[in-house]
Image (tube, rainbow, N blue to C red):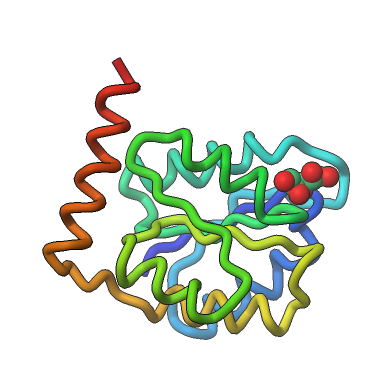
Length: 150
Ligand code: RB5
Protein backbone atom coordinates (compact mmCIF):
# COMPACT_ATOMS: atom_id res chain seq x y z
CA UNK A 1 0.00 0.00 0.00
CA UNK A 2 1.13 3.57 -0.62
CA UNK A 3 1.22 5.28 2.76
CA UNK A 4 2.12 8.76 3.95
CA UNK A 5 3.56 9.49 7.37
CA UNK A 6 3.81 12.92 8.97
CA UNK A 7 4.33 14.25 12.46
CA UNK A 8 4.66 17.55 14.27
CA UNK A 9 7.48 18.02 16.79
CA UNK A 10 5.41 16.19 19.43
CA UNK A 11 5.14 13.14 17.20
CA UNK A 12 8.62 13.35 15.74
CA UNK A 13 10.21 10.89 18.24
CA UNK A 14 8.01 8.08 16.82
CA UNK A 15 8.35 8.87 13.13
CA UNK A 16 11.40 6.83 12.13
CA UNK A 17 10.29 3.77 14.08
CA UNK A 18 6.89 3.81 12.37
CA UNK A 19 8.36 4.34 8.92
CA UNK A 20 10.84 1.50 9.44
CA UNK A 21 8.06 -0.86 10.47
CA UNK A 22 5.82 0.06 7.54
CA UNK A 23 8.69 -0.50 5.11
CA UNK A 24 9.51 -3.81 6.78
CA UNK A 25 5.90 -4.85 6.14
CA UNK A 26 6.41 -4.08 2.44
CA UNK A 27 4.59 -0.76 2.14
CA UNK A 28 5.72 2.25 0.10
CA UNK A 29 6.10 5.13 2.52
CA UNK A 30 6.27 8.85 1.79
CA UNK A 31 7.76 10.83 4.65
CA UNK A 32 6.10 14.26 4.79
CA UNK A 33 8.10 15.55 7.78
CA UNK A 34 8.69 17.13 10.19
CA UNK A 35 12.40 16.43 10.32
CA UNK A 36 13.44 17.63 13.75
CA UNK A 37 12.14 18.34 17.23
CA UNK A 38 11.91 22.05 16.40
CA UNK A 39 8.36 23.28 17.14
CA UNK A 40 6.04 23.34 14.12
CA UNK A 41 2.26 23.59 13.68
CA UNK A 42 0.37 20.29 13.48
CA UNK A 43 -2.28 21.62 11.02
CA UNK A 44 0.46 21.93 8.38
CA UNK A 45 1.26 18.23 8.68
CA UNK A 46 -2.40 17.24 8.74
CA UNK A 47 -2.81 19.22 5.52
CA UNK A 48 0.19 17.49 3.96
CA UNK A 49 -1.20 13.99 4.55
CA UNK A 50 -4.71 15.01 3.56
CA UNK A 51 -3.51 16.42 0.25
CA UNK A 52 -1.38 13.34 -0.38
CA UNK A 53 -4.44 11.12 0.00
CA UNK A 54 -6.84 13.38 -1.88
CA UNK A 55 -4.36 13.57 -4.78
CA UNK A 56 -4.31 9.76 -4.91
CA UNK A 57 -0.62 9.48 -4.05
CA UNK A 58 -1.36 7.63 -0.80
CA UNK A 59 -4.22 5.33 0.16
CA UNK A 60 -3.84 5.97 3.87
CA UNK A 61 -1.65 7.91 6.28
CA UNK A 62 -0.30 7.83 9.80
CA UNK A 63 -0.28 11.27 11.43
CA UNK A 64 1.36 11.77 14.81
CA UNK A 65 1.27 14.71 17.18
CA UNK A 66 1.72 14.87 20.94
CA UNK A 67 -1.76 13.80 21.97
CA UNK A 68 -3.24 12.58 18.69
CA UNK A 69 -6.04 15.13 19.13
CA UNK A 70 -5.11 18.32 17.31
CA UNK A 71 -3.79 16.61 14.19
CA UNK A 72 -6.97 14.51 13.99
CA UNK A 73 -9.22 17.54 14.28
CA UNK A 74 -7.27 19.28 11.52
CA UNK A 75 -7.21 16.27 9.16
CA UNK A 76 -10.97 15.81 9.46
CA UNK A 77 -11.54 19.29 8.02
CA UNK A 78 -10.57 18.00 4.57
CA UNK A 79 -13.45 16.62 2.54
CA UNK A 80 -12.89 12.90 2.01
CA UNK A 81 -10.59 12.47 4.97
CA UNK A 82 -11.77 10.19 7.74
CA UNK A 83 -9.32 10.41 10.58
CA UNK A 84 -9.36 8.74 14.00
CA UNK A 85 -7.08 8.74 17.00
CA UNK A 86 -6.70 5.15 18.20
CA UNK A 87 -4.65 4.13 21.19
CA UNK A 88 -6.03 0.60 21.47
CA UNK A 89 -5.84 -2.29 19.07
CA UNK A 90 -9.60 -2.83 18.68
CA UNK A 91 -10.16 0.74 17.52
CA UNK A 92 -7.08 0.68 15.28
CA UNK A 93 -8.55 -2.09 13.12
CA UNK A 94 -12.26 -1.44 13.57
CA UNK A 95 -11.89 2.16 12.43
CA UNK A 96 -11.00 0.77 9.01
CA UNK A 97 -13.35 -2.21 8.95
CA UNK A 98 -16.43 -0.13 9.80
CA UNK A 99 -15.51 3.50 9.16
CA UNK A 100 -12.98 3.26 6.33
CA UNK A 101 -10.62 5.58 8.20
CA UNK A 102 -7.85 6.80 5.93
CA UNK A 103 -5.73 8.70 8.47
CA UNK A 104 -4.67 7.02 11.70
CA UNK A 105 -3.64 9.55 14.33
CA UNK A 106 -1.43 8.72 17.28
CA UNK A 107 -0.21 10.68 20.27
CA UNK A 108 3.49 10.17 20.86
CA UNK A 109 3.10 11.54 24.39
CA UNK A 110 0.40 8.94 25.09
CA UNK A 111 1.71 5.69 23.64
CA UNK A 112 5.23 4.31 23.63
CA UNK A 113 7.00 3.15 20.48
CA UNK A 114 6.13 -0.55 20.78
CA UNK A 115 2.41 0.05 21.27
CA UNK A 116 2.49 2.60 18.45
CA UNK A 117 4.03 0.01 16.13
CA UNK A 118 1.35 -2.56 17.06
CA UNK A 119 -1.41 -0.04 16.45
CA UNK A 120 0.01 0.84 13.04
CA UNK A 121 0.30 -2.86 12.16
CA UNK A 122 -3.35 -3.43 13.14
CA UNK A 123 -4.39 -0.37 11.16
CA UNK A 124 -2.64 -1.23 7.89
CA UNK A 125 -3.75 -4.88 7.98
CA UNK A 126 -7.40 -3.91 8.35
CA UNK A 127 -9.75 -3.81 5.36
CA UNK A 128 -13.04 -1.93 5.01
CA UNK A 129 -15.89 -4.45 5.25
CA UNK A 130 -18.00 -2.67 2.66
CA UNK A 131 -21.11 -3.68 4.59
CA UNK A 132 -24.24 -1.87 3.48
CA UNK A 133 -24.88 -0.34 6.91
CA UNK A 134 -21.37 1.09 7.05
CA UNK A 135 -21.65 2.48 3.52
CA UNK A 136 -24.95 4.08 4.48
CA UNK A 137 -23.40 5.75 7.56
CA UNK A 138 -20.37 6.94 5.62
CA UNK A 139 -22.73 8.29 2.99
CA UNK A 140 -24.40 10.40 5.66
CA UNK A 141 -21.03 11.82 6.69
CA UNK A 142 -20.19 12.58 3.07
CA UNK A 143 -23.53 14.40 2.82
CA UNK A 144 -22.53 16.57 5.81
CA UNK A 145 -19.32 17.47 4.00
CA UNK A 146 -21.16 18.29 0.81
CA UNK A 147 -23.69 20.50 2.57
CA UNK A 148 -21.18 22.45 4.70
CA UNK A 149 -18.70 22.82 1.86
CA UNK A 150 -21.01 25.12 -0.09
C1 RB5 B 1 2.26 20.43 20.42
O1 RB5 B 1 2.85 20.87 21.59
C2 RB5 B 1 0.99 19.68 20.74
O2 RB5 B 1 -0.01 20.59 21.07
C3 RB5 B 1 0.58 18.84 19.56
O3 RB5 B 1 1.58 17.93 19.28
C4 RB5 B 1 -0.69 18.03 19.73
O4 RB5 B 1 -0.63 17.26 20.88
C5 RB5 B 1 -1.95 18.73 19.61
O5 RB5 B 1 -3.04 18.15 19.73
